Image (tube, rainbow, N blue to C red):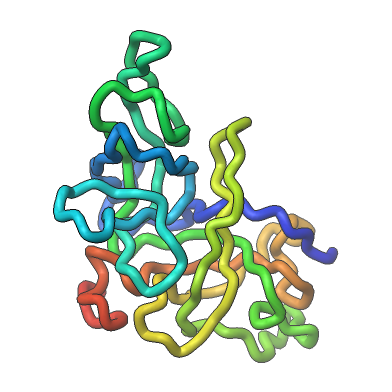
Length: 210
């Protein structure tokens, strides 16, 4: 069945050293004045130019990632109580926003792709064909949704740039018939690992923690 484009961000696929239920999560912080929404499954990065420890929604490029955003809690100005949320809406916090970020260097994520570089028309269950497994990958942030807080991020390109944020590990092919599990058509889902991330790299490709 042909895939359809319905990105969902970076979904936890396999934990690294950490186990359930946190899967290698760390607590990080978003400044209350950060007006950029961050959605569940968005890549995040340190705030550039400020050694404050704050994070923000990542911009595609070669900046080292801080991890993948998994939700937050904050004191709501409007509701006068602590709110637990799958996403940071960009306002309404009294004080710093406590966030949960997967930064385990061995974590794996499922993500949808866009573009002809990610599929092979000759792929079958018995012949893998020419697929960009092992290549570095770039993402686009897409458009998240406030209805369920989910990210709209997806992989947008592959290349040899050693400081791209992700590396392709494999393709999703199970369960058959589910959207994204057909590598022979556009928009297949892939399994990726961190390539250029705080706990994974020194900023020059996969030379840090394996």
